Length: 178
Image (cartoon, rainbow, N blue to C red; front, side, top):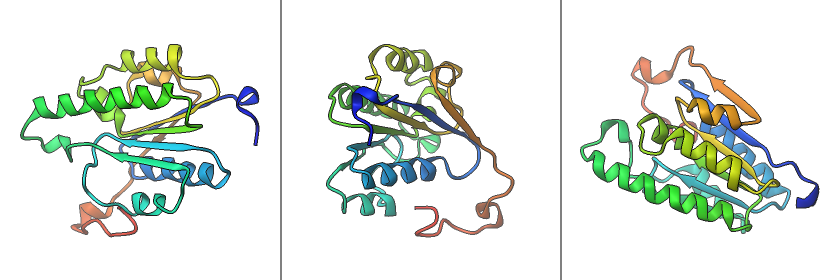
């Protein structure tokens, strides 16, 4: 592995309406952990909902996982609470990124928060430009990535849905969707 001094930390954005944004990021989590890198995952939407990825992460000493959201915010009953929770999670993100403890940080579903104007895309982009360590890899997921975030990213992938099982009245399957 390259030392931090020799590493170019990448900023990757996974966005779009198709499936696979978080799954792709989690593939990088386990790939990085397998190489011995220290990884932090911070989830903005998923809260106490148990996922297979989170269960798998417990088998790695070098993965720290935080599922802190209030649940599916597009069906919110308390937007003020969702905003407050998102702001608190954003503060934790900045703390973890600044800490120097991690080689890869995943901000899962943060793009939703900027789309809802809970955290501005400009604020996220400015933090990345001015405070992210140069050697740190950073992945941001979720639909509707802010143009400012896309502009500062090195790699942006848009997942495009062609069709989805949910549209055929097929419920989320354990091991595939969560």
